[in-house]
Amino acid sequence: MQKEMTVWGVGPKFTLFSVLYLVLALAAHTIWYPLFVMRGIPHALLIVVGVVLIAIGVPIWVTASKEVDRAYEGGYLATQGVYALCRHPIYGNAIFITIPGVLLFFRSWLLLTVPAVMYVIFWLFVREEEDCLRQQFGAAYLKYQKEVPAVFPRLWKLRDAFWYPEPTGQVTEGLYAATAGDASMFVYCDGEHAIAIDAGYGGKALQRQLMRIPVEPASVTHLFLTHADVDHAGGVDLFPNAQVYLSGEEERMIDGSTPRMLGFYHSPRLGRPYTLLADGDVVTVGAIEVRAIATPGHTPGAMSYLVNNSVLFTGDALALRNGRVRSFYRLFNMDTATQKTSIVKLARLQNVSLLCTAHTGCIADYALAMKDWREEK
Image (cartoon, rainbow, N blue to C red):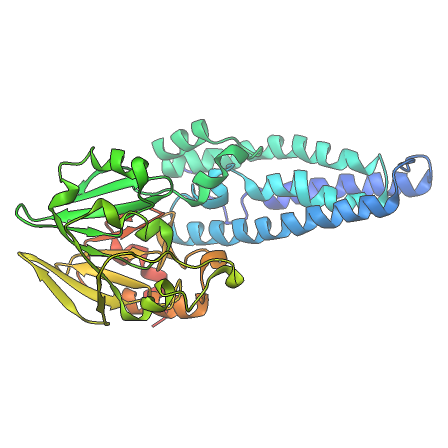
């Protein structure tokens, strides 16, 4: 019989027993004060370290809580983002980051045993939660359980937790991805004609990836840039025979007039002729029809491309996480509020059979991926 569990999992039990031990430890610290006081360590230093730990832990807790809420409501398994670092980031964060940060304020050796006891309590109860997940998700959870640790985060996988581009190779009939570093670019062909969406970082790394797909870069006649950042436009020279297209609003990013990153970064100049597109423009290449869709936010001229009214390429106009569309990472956006409006615009598209992003892979179930954004209309 399948077990039922709320979105809280075993959190209430874990919290109850953890708080009970915390109260006992705090009472003992108070009764036998100053027996357990940390001596020789400046209290100010402990407070600073505690504040830093709390500042790190609270965003992790908020992010993990939001993701698990979405996963529970949507009935899917969260394995990306912070859930790619460890299976139980909420418990792990409480045990190793946030709670120790708070306890340092008390300057007590006894209170620092609380995280150790919490870790034991975690293992006493978490098996019940994992049993439910195994029953619900079967082989998918077994694979996830085997690859990802419970609470100790795989910090060496930090980049992979948030950047998981489509691997080089065939994505679907006529469509190929070439991925170097954390960015994918795509080549679409109809047998006679070939176009490219974005050009990656360029260089020898991308050249090697392009050699793994059955389309010669020299055969690409049209190159559509979603925007002008170096991880999308750095490889334009690898396509010597391609006419380059980008949004008219993006020209400000390549002429030196509009900087990024608080003025510390400018997009590289293209160094070759290009054609500017406006929202709704259509370019036809043999049997391939490319419709330009303005999706500003990541940059002022960010543009998505709908190919043959079926395959949508969004660059950094959005991100995919656990099969759902999210706004791209705020740190890299010039205007996240505008980007969210652009995503709602994309959510209105019908008959999209495949969504491809530059850094977070592709997905075929467009309606499900866009479900949250369609409800915002």
